[in-house]
Image 1 (cartoon, rainbow, N blue to C red):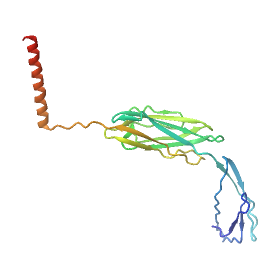
Image 2 (image 1 turned 45 degrees about the vertical axis):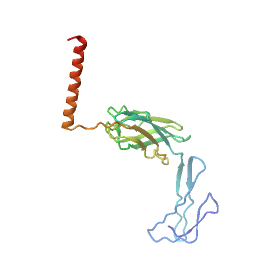
Image 3 (image 1 turned 180 degrees about the vertical axis):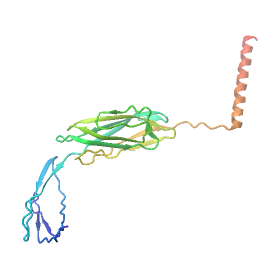
Image 4 (image 1 turned 90 degrees about the horizontal axis):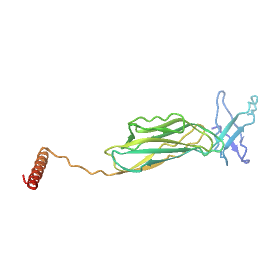
Length: 231
């Protein structure tokens, strides 16, 4: 937004070419995409900003951190069960960076319709920070976790399958995150819920008929026992 031309003949250096005029109290910004071949901390410094009408300004500097994003995987155990059953959600988060520890590790998993945290949750947390899902929750969240370079950690919680659930339930989490790291992947897993047999409801007439049928069955069994016993 400075109205001049960036001269980038040298891929390691950027310079402003041409005339740049700034009104009193005004400012402008220069944004340039950059890339790095390997992870690490890359300090960047400018030379003094000069002008033909004012004294030179001080140099500016900043450090760019390039790190590999965290990864997350998850699974259901068991992955096939009937409605009203309980399955365990297992999550593994990995820091693939060989240089940087990950702090502020975050993981949020909105559960699909038909799944909620069981009672009791039986939650386990090997990632540090806060992971405290409560019975009935439909979102499972980790905040403030930590991971050493190259380390992994595990989360676990029991989930209840609602009576109305059925079929294939796809569970996709939000991207895993950490302070100073690019966003990671969105872990996903699928839970298969077996269909339940539908039991027809009986009205008053149906209940009366069922009661008569059961009573008749009882009378026949009593008569048969008497015949066999000679009574």
